[in-house]
Amino acid sequence: MKLQQSYVHGASDVPLLGDTIGQHFDAACTRWGDSDALISRHQGIAWTWNDLKARVDDFAAGLLTLGLAPGSRIGIWSPNCAEWTITQFATAKAGLVLVNINPAYRLSELEYALNKVECAALVTAVRFKTSDYLGMLRELAPEIDSAAPGELSAKALPHLKTVVQIGESDIPGTYAFADVMAMGTKAGHAAIEALAPTLQFDDPINIQFTSGTTGAPKGATLTHHNILNNGLFLGETLEYSEADRICIPVPLYHCFGMVIGNLAAVTHGSAMVYPSDAFDPLATLETIAAERCTSLYGVPTMFIAQLDHPEFESFDLTSLRTGVMAGSPCPVEVMRRVIDKMHMEQVTIAYGMTETSPGSTQTSVHDELERRVSTVGRALPHVEVKIVDEAGRIVPVGATGEFCTRGYLVMRGYWNDDEKTAEAIDDAGWMHTGDLATMDEDGYFNIVGRIKDLVIRGGENLYPREIEEYLYRHPKIADVQVIGVPDAKYGEELCAWVKLVDGETATDEDIRDFCQGQIAHQKIPRYVKFVDDFPMTVTGKIQKFAMREVTIAELGLVEEKTA
Image (cartoon, rainbow, N blue to C red; front, side, top):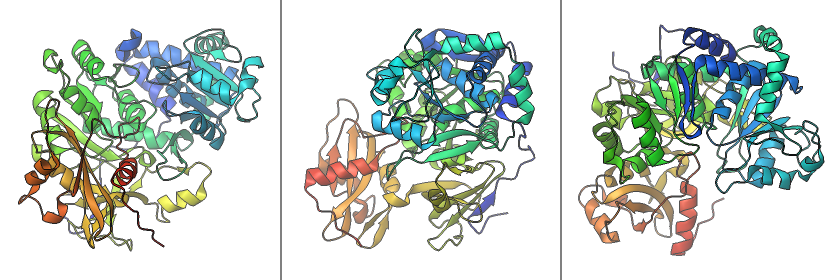
């Protein structure tokens, strides 16, 4: 039966899990104990599920020994590593709320995050590349140098008492990660075992900060039920089993890494494989080949970096079967290259947001090629989706409107922010994403842009995504982003930021000539800016607001004030 309205429910005969993450983790370790669980290649670590469970249980018991009580918030501020994953599962077993802190955060952002959710403890890397994490923490809380471990009393961070650092011993005012594990070994696991039946799957277990591009970051509060089930059904769609080995170069602090990566693995017995502490295209290619990974994750810019790496052809990637491209709009031409060159015949596209755990829709590994390269798939099991107009009415199939979703995946809310929560989740429980989308009569969705990215030129709605997809066909263009900039005559005009293929050259007119007669004249960018890179978040999301600001300044444009 063909759909008429843009509403669908992902019906499924696979029931939702009623476990906490700790309960499910224990069951996974019992079932797949001697199979590979975690390979952290840059650390030289290869653990079975039994190996991982022993460390998780020790660390969980150690956290309780430190006096942390269920419901307490504990931050983690670190690039990808095995300790991150131990902390993820240990905090879940101890009933603590894990607060993911962006490894790129600096002083004011760290201070805001820790105080916003009243973190009692922080697990932190000592340093990474140019980031001196402990140095920044000392700058915010100089009292740490004279404090006994676990007894910090800092004016700027009044709630933070305990700091656990990864990788070194004997740093004043802190516990070493290994020392906390040793405390747990000594105390034993009885307290963790006694706690398990008291924890409920609707308890908050994770806070993830949104990017905060239009104000202070908001703390999306997620439950065991939210993220465990999302990991399950994303993994089901990918047809994971204990035979799969998932290459995870995306950040663990983000839902992509910790849910689609780690929790999809724990629900299916697949191995988690970390190629490096932060994304590196060469390390990722080396890891896929060496570990015979069957699945690979990334945002489009990551896949482009691997495909364009000068050593790409030297790696055997034939073990790859599937994977997920997500995080930002996925160019059709990039998808085709991934399928053709990386042997990912069953690669999928997933769509979602932090507030929805994150996945709402996903293509199937069995979808025909055209569906997998040109849509973001259908609603995942147990997920409702509707597309609505500005008045909140469901639009007909094929019409553009705002993508809204409802179900187990929708967050509890933004931490201590009822006003922002009410703006995002309506009285009927629908999460309003702010994304513009269409749905076809078979229930496949297309994301056509952000409501805030919509360009209105001379009263006509223009969707940057549509123009980007056309420009990706240009043989000299490696990547492109289209934005709207102010214009005295039309209100807004289009500007294309173009990244050329290495060694190629082009002019503004070359790009515009490529569009002539192929797309409507109003969709042809008036301005073209050639760049080497785009401003983006650590997760690889393009920051179009920053591009707009740069373009306005460089071209001397005037932003019209609106009431």
